[in-house]
Image (cartoon, rainbow, N blue to C red):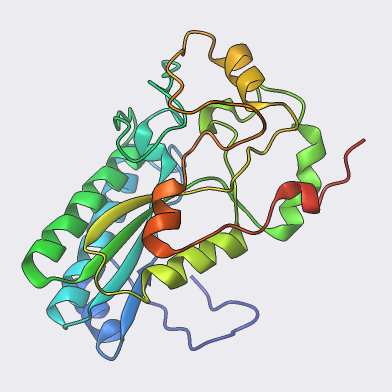
Length: 251
């Protein structure tokens, strides 16, 4: 680990799997946003991913709650639904996927996110700290829009994430809003853009990539997201404002 090239705020290098260090770094904090984790399945041995992600999240929430911090948000993931890293070709039970959709991961990464959401509930039960678990879609930074022309017409690409995406700036806004309110309890929220990342209509995407899925909870008539963000909009008074079509020239 090293400090960022451009240090915009004070940086303290901390081992989040060491509870003592976490207590030390959080002792004067007013709120906590926790995004430190192994960010993907299969980049590390399964047990390493699970141990790192679960232990670090437990330590952050345990220390924050005990120190009397009232507001926190953690990075969960759409991967918890199980489709993203499925090796068996798991399909959604219905679309758009909302927070009530079954979570059926086959991998330790998705499982770690479910455990972390349960840890959030436990800490909230004990301390009353608000813990918002943001089930993030595919995070896109501005420079990544250059890649979009390579896949926006091919439904087979990105189908395991249901073609979802969220601009990093909109994700950051969701995190900020999540810690500005200490009355949210322990909740889970999908964070996705209002549209898919494709220049193919949502109904055509489903018909091409998931023809066996017929349970559509909303009418699909355009490019609307298949990872529902309605709960986040209501709970956080949040609205994503960055859409890929604003940054990509269509041929």
